[in-house]
Image (cartoon, rainbow, N blue to C red; front, side, top):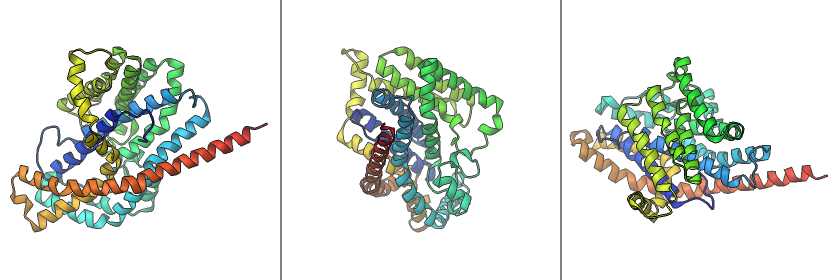
Amino acid sequence: MATTKNWSPELEGLRGVASLWVFLGHIALLVNCKIPIIAVPKLGVDLFILLSGYLMAKNYFERQTKEPWGEWQTIKTFWLRRYFRIAPLYYVLMLVALLAGSYLGEMREIIAGAFPSTATETSRYSDFSFFNVLAHLTFVFGDLPQYAYETALPDWSIGLEMQYYVLFPFIMLLTLRLGFAQALVTLMIVVLAGRYLLPELYTAFPMPSMILIKLHIFIAGMLMAEAVRQRRILFIGLALLAPVASALMNIRMDGVQVFFEALMILGMTGVLWPWQQKNLLQRLFSVPRALLCHRFFTWLGDVSFSVYLLHLLVVTPVIGLLLSHDHLANYGSGARYLITVGICFPIVYLLASVLHRAVEMRGIAIGKRVIQRGNKTERALNLP
């Protein structure tokens, strides 16, 4: 997500927490350390999704004077911003993942040999087929079950995110026609109905990479943004329909995970809420808010996208090598986990810091120049 002048440090800190959660959760899964909640990295992805829905709606409202929703230029600018925020780093690390795919697959087999419950289809690590590469270059892989989970990257959620970006401007136009709450609740009902009308479509994907499976979580983030903007509790209640939809969809979600989805919605809204007077709730949320605004957490947020895309390229070989040469499997689960985190954390975050500056920031700068040139051309063409 690109930084804007209205970007709050709490949001940056929450992004840092989400990426750290996914990073730590994947390590817990791969070394077979069953840590409650931490070992469920898909909840960290859901936090990312909530943040994305929140930020997209927030920015659209804040920019609507300069960038009216109904204009094609606004939609094109939105898509270009999102493309240049995601694509440059993704393409770099996808190339690395493809080139190192065979080696990563071997390391993954070593891990599965030590911990059979972690086994996955390792052939996906070295799929150099034309259609797999094309699907990932064009970001349509999330809609194609055979390619949605076919690289060494945790990129199923990137395909999901790109689908949301394509739909988002039209969702906002729909809110103008039907009303914000009415349009978003209607969309939640539609995607939930689709689960029962088209059950095979929803269950065809190895990961929830198809937008209909997760659109209700993006919508919850949008409703939270409106709750904070208008200071209206009603929108928080509507956002809490998303965990209900998750439970009714019943796609690899148990009751505990649904509960934590609801808890994330309440917690995130409480942290971002514009408290105008001191009371018990304000004091309760002031502590996590202060922590999230701390320089350490905002730094975690700065590098969060790089960490998310990069971490498995480091974690997988580190665990494979530890199993091969240090007999990691002979240690207790807690020791395995701490050793792996201790080795991987500095490597991943150092590399992510370099990638953030060298690739992410440059990609954003290129995107800004492309948008500026496009706007100048558009104005020139519209001159009488």
